[in-house]
Each structure stands twice: as structure tokens, then as C-alpha cells.
Amino acid sequence: MGNGLCSENFSRFFYRLQDNVFSLDDTVNRINEELPGVAEEVSLGRLVTVFKAPVSIYEPGGVNESYIGYENPAGYEPEPYERSFVTGEGGEVILSAYPKKGCVWNETDKRSIDFLLQTLFIFCSRARLMKLMKLVEITDALTGALNMVGFMQSVGRIFAMHKGQEYIAAFSNIKNFKYVTVVTNPARYAEVAEQVEKNGCVTGMLRMELAQEAFKHTSEYDDCIQNYLMEQVNK
Image 1 (spheres, rainbow, N blue to C red):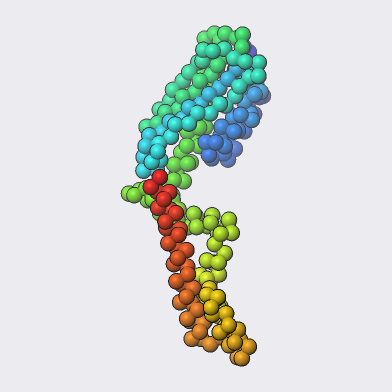
Image 2 (cartoon, rainbow, N blue to C red):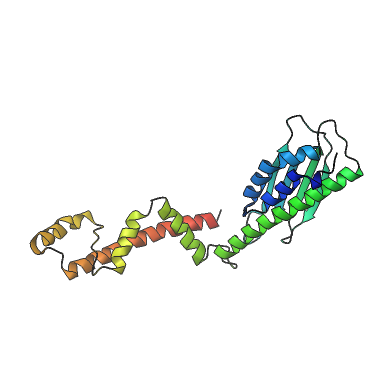
């Protein structure tokens, strides 16, 4: 095996991993995309990453995930060179590198592979840290439930899926009932139409009544959202 660590492929590999890739899945995908060129130079046949994290307030079920980062179509030797790293949260990252089929790594080769595995651990750890920072941002540290930031983000995703448009219209009516009339009860249609036809608008009293009905309507949406989020917490 030549000095692949000094090659252009190796330089490009590390440069690309430094891009703004923040999730562990994104990091593994980037490794899958960029590693083949390096793998040929270091006679790598297969790379497997196992990531473990303990049960915590932010990961109620813990983490135990395995990723195949690279696999040479020509095959690989059965015995891996393996490194285990402890994470700051008390978890573990296990990186297993298998020689290409028909290749035997000497001690110099293993030092190159060791350097590669240590570098991959650093990038995987960064991705994990970014995820933890995100979880800390949206999670109540005492209960593990979503905090206000997390709640608003979840509601925002519901709206983005166009499942809350009626809620948005009704909420606008609550905040601006003096200027906006939203009818949430079909039984009021005729009354509203009659006042508009007669006066060109509805009376302030009717607009206030409709605002009260809108508030009741949105509270039902709130209950649905609360029940959904509670189900997620209790999973």
C-alpha cells in the first residue's frame, strides 16, 4: 500500500467532510460518497461504523445504530482492524476496517488505517454533538418533553404540511376580530350573509361572537396537538 495519506484523493476526502454536514446520517452519506477514491489507495475493502449512546433525557431509547460506510465490489478479507472510541456522553463509536480481498496490512499500513479511523471518529462525533445541541434546544431538561421552542417547531411542521390552515385563519380572527371575520360554524352563514347584504358588513357584536367561536375551535386543535405530542413523549 502506498502513502495514500498524502494523495489528492485523501486531501479532497477530508476537505469534503469539513463541509456543513451536521447529522450523523449526512456524515455517513458523505463518507459513502467520498471514500471510494481513498479506499483504493489504502486497500480498504469494507468500513463499518457502530454508534452507541446511553439512555438519557434526550435519547429515551438510547442509540444503537450500524452504518456500512464502504464496501468494495471485489470483496474484502474477513478479519477487521477495529478501533473503539468513547464519546463525551458515555457512548461508544466502533469503527471496523476490513482489508481489500487478497490484501494483508502490515504495521505501516495499519498506522494509516488507524489515522483514517480516528479522523472519521472526529467527524462522527461532531455530527453527534450537533444533534445533541439541537435536542437540548427543543427539549425540557426535567421532563424530556418538548419545550416551547420544540413545540412551536412541531406546530410549524404541521402548518407546513397544510394541515393547519383552518387553525391559522381562526387564530387571525381571534387576534384581529375587530377587522377580520371568520366563520367556523356553518350555522352562522345565513346570519353573516344577511348582515353583509343589509349593511355592507357585520356588526361589532356579531364579529365578537364569531371570535369567541373561533377561539373555541382553535382550542380543539390545541387539544389534538397536545394529545399527539403526549403520545410521542410516552413512546
